[in-house]
Amino acid sequence: MIRRSTVVYIVVLIAMVGAYFYLKNRDQAEPDVAATLEPTQEVAYLFTEDSGVPSSIRIEAQTGEIIELSRDAENAWVLTQPFEAKADQASSEATASQVTTMRVLDRIPEMDLEVVGLEVPAYTITIRFTGNQERTLNIGVITPSENGYYVQDASNKEVMIVSRSAVDALLGLLVTPPYLETPTPSPLPATETPVPSLTPEVSTPSSATPTP
Image (cartoon, one colour):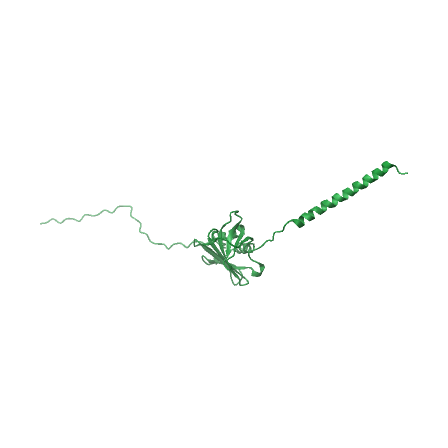
């Protein structure tokens, strides 16, 4: 005959084993539930793969500066503005990659263009793609959070906030163009300049002829 104390021990043991497996399964299930409840944020880019890859990039500043680089017949990057020159291929390809990584952080359906610097944009970026598509972007001011620029697509007048890092990389071309070699200014033509005499000229008085 089984003692009552033994029965109690068996019941307690079964309860402890059941509690162990319950807690173990609950700990494994909770992260999965949390993952399903966590909202996902879709990453949106300004240009899609359907556009192709950039074939020319032109940046103009309101103050008059301009830089333009494009691919030649051999698919090599060259500079065409402010003057024609060979381009550093690595830097140019890095610039083209920045174009494809321009993220759209937000879209603003209604916005006062003057408030965000788009009434008279500080910069204009025109990009042509291999798919014969051309897009022009008006660049306004930096957002209050300083993580993006107010940008307007010139084709449909849509105002967006675009990631600041990509825009800054493109605007930096105006300051440091990707020249293959640093251009050397042409020397000015030499002009003959008369060397001043260090000895003062002494005037010789004319001899006076006595009057008879």
